[in-house]
Image (tube, rainbow, N blue to C red; front, side, top):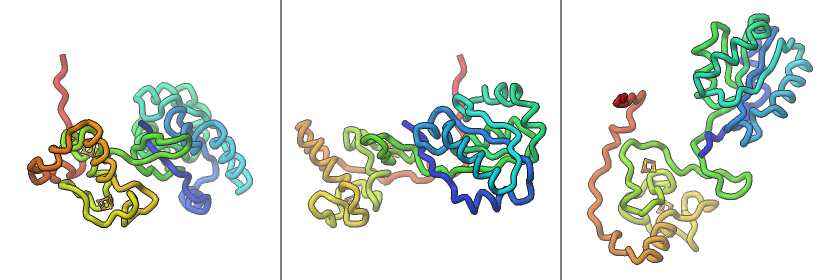
Length: 216
Ligand code: SF4
Ligand code: SF4
């Protein structure tokens, strides 16, 4: 599982940074490195782009996992270069950006757009498989999510529009209900398709959500 990110257009980044001259750069050694959006190579490339645009880069680092609270120690180790900066450009998912913001009193800006939580279907191709809906229905389908992977969020079976196994709304994707049917058939569980599906409680997706975890 990875948080999938895309690099923001350079013009947008420059607009975000327009009031700042000295910039510190932070990348992430986990998801953003896998996506080639915020690993060492991308951070160094951004450094050159900022310099070419007249900015001064006071320092850079790729934190092992930027969304982890240990990031505060990475910021401490880099405190001199961070202190010399007017702002920090964080090339991570939104979680990483907010983690840096929580431990820094500098203005913090995102260098990436956070897209979705994805699964690597084939090398370099990620697919969204869970939107964290708060009421998992994978038991209905034995493990393939229609909430995320059906363009219409159909819970009770296909819409009927699929063509040659592809979704009518997004033909680049398989119709998830064809995948679910094939899986149930293989498992000898096609009778699941006649199960009553209760209405889904979409209030479980209201944001911001909180969770209380029982501590030992
Ligand atoms: S039903 Fe789908 S979106 Fe909801 S929690 Fe399960 S996998 Fe995630
Ligand atoms: S074709 Fe399949 S995946 Fe696409 S909207 Fe209809 S049921 Fe959902």
